[in-house]
Image (cartoon, rainbow, N blue to C red; front, top):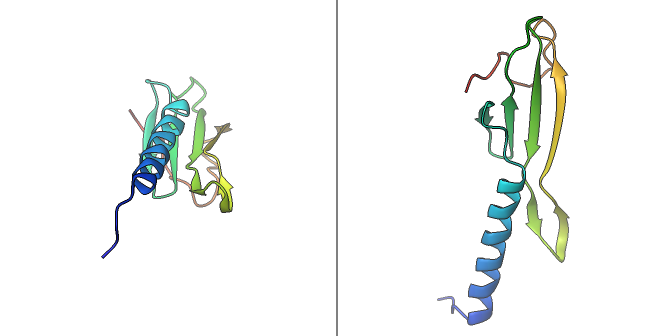
Length: 96
């Protein structure tokens, strides 16, 4: 049986708080529609008159700081033409 030490509880609380803070720091705009995957999230902004839209990819942080390779949560936004959606992404505009 595992013992629950104060240090273990503190580490768990710190990691949970850090993950929640990172998610809030990379929140999509309220007008965006989002689709969540296990390791990332796609959020689409409203469609422009020409049919294009901006898509944001949020990749969630993973790993434990100081143990192995830690990756911070990061976000990248880019324009999408609905006639040429990048491979391996949602094939439609994600509505809010």
